[in-house]
Image (tube, rainbow, N blue to C red; front, side, top):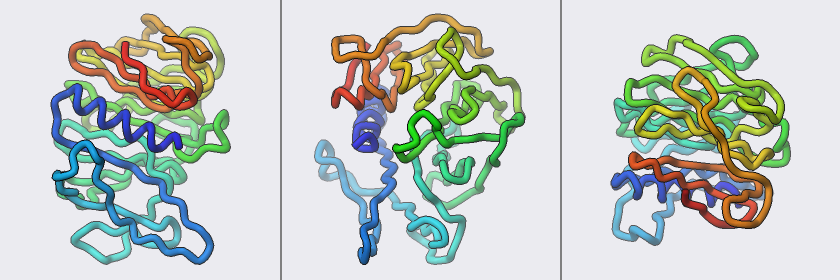
Amino acid sequence: RSSRLVAILATAALVLLGLAVVLLADEGILHRGEERGGAPAVLPAIPDDPVAFVWQSRGAPGPLQTRESSEAQTPLIDPYHLAIDPHGNLWVPDTRSNRFQILAPDGTLRQAWGSTGRDKGEFNFFNVALRNENGGGAAAFDAAGNLYVADPGNFRIQKFGPDLRFLTAWGSKGEGEGQFLSLTDLAIDGQGRIYALDAVRSTVQVFDANGEFLRSWGTRGVKDGEFLTPYGLAVATDGTVVVADTGNHRLQQF
């Protein structure tokens, strides 16, 4: 499943960055008559590492639970690409509600941020081009703490300051430079350049911090450098790019 390859990509990216942290977003699949408790699974690559905390929800109207609390909090449906801000907080795209749920490093829920719409600071994480797939939306932080959000339903990327004040946005629907059909993930390199992955176009586009188009690569296919519905990417500090080429069941490194 695409979610598995996205999780593998997250692990690969963190290994490239030299971090001993693994983040997993599991959308979960409930069958009729089944109640899943959300027990964590540890990746085979690091079998002795403990699970720091589990943050789970059975979706609306069920409660969201953190490890230390059984109180009903904000429901969570379809978590997708995860991100960590400069303060160590975990940002979880809550794709059905077009917002982020933000956790402290110990797993405590800090706040939910974002709302549905097309205006500045509003999001539509539903990916119209991939309506048969779960999940959408992604976040990335630069060294200064600025936040970049993939807003696939609005075919754009939005940028916010460290105080979450709206700064700028760019993008539109299409296949030209700076246009998108199916934004699936974002990453930022050590120079502050933004890498945007488009699953339908099967391309990676690169922008400067103000949204100016710099370059792109990729096309649909099965050969080296080609992609089929890629779902995730990560960039190491040395400029190495890893793409989860989901439709081809592989990772590609550039």
